[in-house]
Length: 209
Image (cartoon, rainbow, N blue to C red):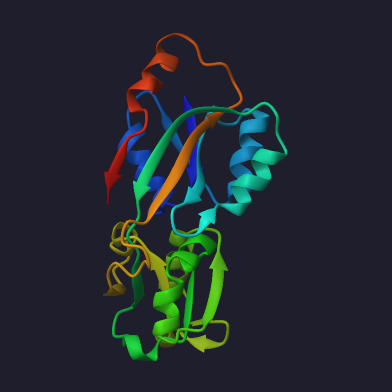
């Protein structure tokens, strides 16, 4: 079965998906945008999708809610909760006190609002995912006209470890230490037989990064 998630590798959706579905029964397909996940469910390019729904700190994931509202044939198969711990990440040699701009997904920025305000990091750039923001940080020399030594991203420790030229400036910067995101496994197909039954084995799992 083809399972889509919001990528790339290192995103929170990717971490959850690999923990539960990295088996021979599934092929995993990263997507650059939540919108594309739903479009590929519609056209049959994927059979299942892991969709971020809401966060205990920052509330509803707006992109997901908008796409779900446009469709009447979606089926929620399972629910998962991921305890999310964010890191502030920058290029090697960067000092925390020099950071002026941070990039990440809207949800991650919102989940770290108090921390960012306290650190006077006032320029926020929204990205399609935490991993995309971090990949960009690794590859460019400037963001929004600022030298890369003044820029950071917010992502997981797992994601930060994928890039040799990045360092973690601070761990656990989320405002709520019990920060949790709820994901739904969704489809628009009836899944019967052994493949459908197997999905029930994963129901309502909760785990830490």
